[in-house]
Every structure is written in structure tokens, then in C-alpha cells.
Amino acid sequence: MSIPPRARLTARTIRLIASRFPTVGVFDDIADNEDDLRAAFELEELTNTRLDATERLRRIPGGEVAAGGAGATLVMAAFLYASADGGRFSDRRLGAWYAAAEIETALSETIYHHERRLRASAAGFPARIQMRELLANLDDDFMDVRGLQSARPELYHPTDYSASQAFAAGVRWPFVAEPQRGILYDSVRRAGGTNVCVWRPMSVPLPVEQGDHYEYNWAPSGTLTVIKLTGVKV
Image 1 (cartoon, one colour):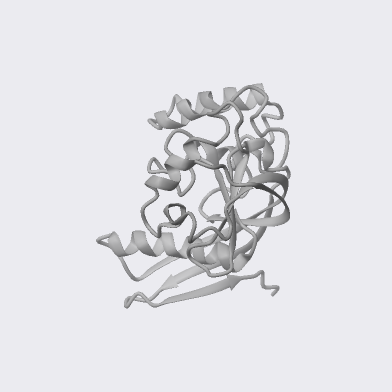
Image 2 (tube, rainbow, N blue to C red):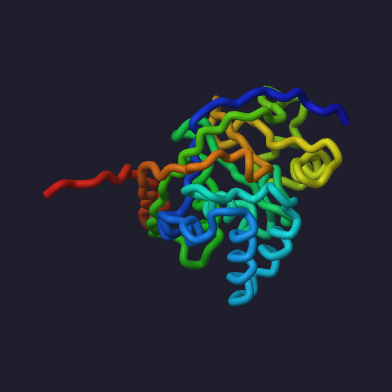
């Protein structure tokens, strides 16, 4: 299998997460180096049953844990507390930092996954979910599969990630001898959108900044309205 070329990404990227998660990382202020952050995460794992997170932390080599800056805990959470099913270019062994180059793409990606979950749920609609931006200024070389939907359709299947996960497993950091740090790819959910999947925590520069908040509001019929939330002075 040929390895796609690499391209430099220098961009302010957007990751959207649920607003219910704390705006300040739990360990950002008390763990300013890798050893302290590893110890903090391991202590936390003693109080819950998320064994995958403990194993994932052990898979990250020494010197590669994001620490010592605002948002470090949020970066590490993307790698440690990811879905057991994985994502398009990550499997259950280790999560990744997924982000988009455009807010419209970030919205389209997260709306798709939330709506799919809601439609499969007994509770379903109506539903409201609030999201917030995490902004990271990426500046690194990543594998580039943009424009390859026809040549590599298995990487762009709308719902089946088995082939793209298998591809990533053979090239991604830290599991191979000459690993790729991440991958640039076209959005499947928004035509013309660009996504990045960062496989290495240290490739997500700190600080990670908090951005705008959005509310996804589904009516009982399933119709969606997206509202950008802003502060109001009284």
C-alpha cells in the first residue's frame, strides 16, 4: 500500500465538545509537567472503571504527554477518553484530536454524529445540546489524503470506519517504526471542508483556547436549529 504524501498545516483549527465538560482542565493548574499529569490521570482512574483510559495512557511514550499549559487536560482527554468504537482514523487503542479548519465543517461533523445517536435512541427528539469551541493553532506536517475520495474510497466511507481505521493503524504514531503525526482529509459531512486527525498530543500546541458556544436544538419532528450563544449585558 502506497503512503500518501505529507503537507504542512498551519491553521487555527476548531474542535467542538459538549459544554457540559469543564471549561478549565481539572489538572491544568496542579500538574505542570508530564510526570505529575500521568500520576494525576492514574489516580483518577482508581475511582472509576474506565480501564481503557489507563491502558491508553501507558501507550503514550515518555516525553509525549501534553502538560504545562491551558487546555492540556482537554488535549489528553481526547486521547484517553475517546469512544471505544474509535473514529474514522483512530481505533480503541488510543484516541486522537479531531478538528476542522472551518467552523462550518466542525458544526456539520458534530451535528451528524449527535443526530445519528439521537435517532437511534429511544428518547430521540426533542433534544438540546450545547457545544463550545476549542481553538488550537496547529503547525505541523501531516499525511494528506485530501482529494483522494475516488482513488481511496475506503477511507471515506460514510459510516463504516473499519478500512480507514486499519489504514491508520499501519501508519499512525506511536504504533509503527516511522509514524505519521496525523492526517489531513476531506470532510464527508460538508463538501469542501477540511478535517485533521492529530495522532500525537505534542502536535496540539498549548494553550488551547475557549471559543464560542453553540446550541443544537432539535424539534420533536427532528428539525434542527443551530444557535450561536453570546454574552448579554444587562
